[in-house]
Length: 324
Image (cartoon, rainbow, N blue to C red; front, side, top):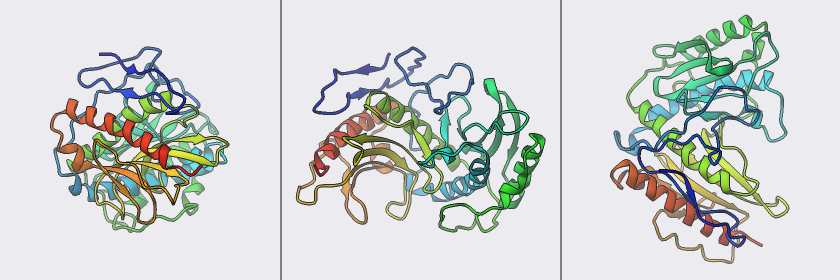
């Protein structure tokens, strides 16, 4: 089954998307290849099919989320020092690689050999990846602490002729502390594989969405909040729609898809989203679809169809809610 798009309507500002539900693999020109903006030559990328969610309750992934979020932070210390800076801080973001089943940084080209750093969520494995997907090094974080992770990264930097002192510099944003950031050893558990499925599925649907949203940003994982999202500026850039997935936070103790309009028209009643979900209005306003909502749909095909329908409807509703 191939990717299908309905005809473009200027009033909707985007084409509706329909995902291949089961057994679909697409490498043709119509599919956004899941590579970061500078398109390092990794060889052909293959889009994954939707992977069924529900091996664990959506509310049981907190520990997995905290571990993966903590493990990503030292990589940001490196990208901040060696990936060319961008005004929107996207040089410190990560892309999802379906080939490697991992989050990958931007290219670090200042040393003797261009490479990227990555984190394979399912196994908490650090990666150093060269061109053509050549794995230059890897290290499991199971049983190791954050300082030991930084030691491995320092060796990788030294091998490339780069100064590892960047690992001693503090992050440029605040992150809520947790036991792994404070030195508790990492522990690989099966819940991490479920968390990885959420990220892989999200990259699948958001890349399809971003392909047909005029002006949409590449799909990126932002390490501060650990969400993965695309942003569509509207008009002169003062208005926008942001569609993404949070792995869980203070608002919801489980992964959830969101569509956030900005700014919101305060005098307008928020439109009903027929397929489900809810509007979140405490501290921020956005349409939300929780992991529990998705898991209740049953098999992989039903889940993919449900999320695709919801994203289409939530995007339309969010666009209506934006202040003119």
